[in-house]
Length: 137
Image: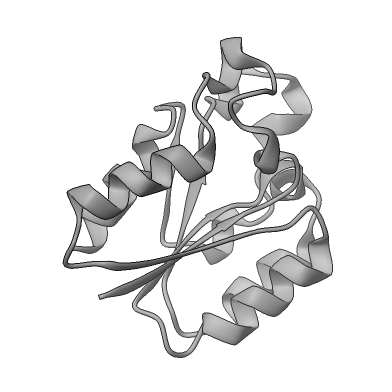
């Protein structure tokens, strides 16, 4: 099984940024633990702060991978283009959020991309990525 993780803006700062919300572990550190936990899964990771680059990655893997776990960061609430990209590919996309978006500012309560995703995991910290893999397995 081939799974693509796609993280959006500011997620490159995990482990440094708002540790009370996002924890103290960098995504790269966490990713290594997931690869050990799921040796049978080919996990690919991509992060960008640029909306168009996220769309390009969805297009690139969206017809050949078995699954995409997408944390679009702030673009979750603003990007019709990312939602359209998800709708345009055949690979199922699971929306993942580290924090509970419904316990945050009101503008974060609306996900524009949810309608194009098969589901959402929100508020379970980095564990949400592990649960996403388990769902696809």
